Image (cartoon, rainbow, N blue to C red; front, side, top):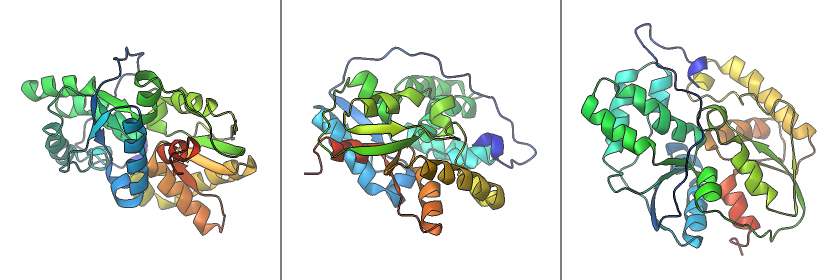
Length: 272
């Protein structure tokens, strides 16, 4: 998260406006999926489960093979030029006028909000970025608001805690979407945890640059999650899950978090 980054002194930032209510299109026949580098490297099954859920809704999912990072690690570390070139490489991958579904509120926030800052001095590119921005949807947001899914719970009773990333809350305004989706599952008891609105401590490069502070933050987060007595932890952001699960493992805890796409796929019979 940029507020925790140690940026070079010549870096400039234009803060994005708070997430505003948006109008949603009808369910399309085709979408792009931006899978994120963390899912690609550490949680590939979550990406596949996201595709399975979208295809079950009758949507053709297109996954441009040249996609890589959204550019957020460089951007939040103050390396604007490098971030711009990483972002530029993504722009040509989504040429058709289809929604771009992003399996992370953090990466979605980067593409929807901060690309506008990156290319503010390139008028022609900025016009493309503005058009792309309107097509960026976080995964849970897209399922609920565009697909209008109605989920049928096929799992055993479970007590579950939901972690929502800072970017999903503050940049994409998608705090409630995961809650509503999970609320459709009649055998899932969602329990709120203390520190719910606080960062898990990952923050991309922040966790590398400030490991002691990051470690203290994730210790607070995992303690709060365990104190709920939850059987499961779900998040729509695999960066957060990487940090939270790593802390759980280091603590010798059995509890491990999973991406909401995998949780929903299995709960609704997809894993059978």
